Length: 132
Image (cartoon, rainbow, N blue to C red):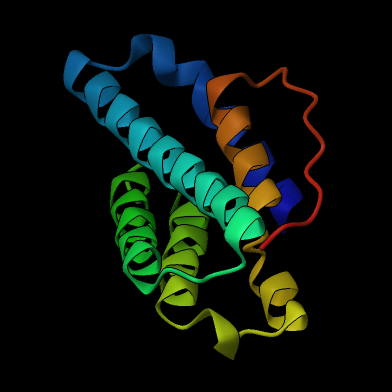
């Protein structure tokens, strides 16, 4: 499924040069929202590894960041938007998700980052590996 998502994202990049200013701005906003969600999530995992203490307030914010990414991406890639929506739901109650659930929903963090990087550069050779 991620391959299909990445292929679709690559196909979207060709017409971007001809997008109107409004469309380019919407695309940039979508890229910013997913970048923010990714960065904040990686930072949370870094801090979690250092302290081993979950921070429910930060997890609530992560849910909101992923939800915002889903809303922005719906204009450009509905599959990736749905993945971001699932990621938002994950952060509402992460202990509810098994490793198999994460795999089935395709919400591993590195996979999402790979799709984001494909949106930035269709020639990227980033190979996603597993994180939640």
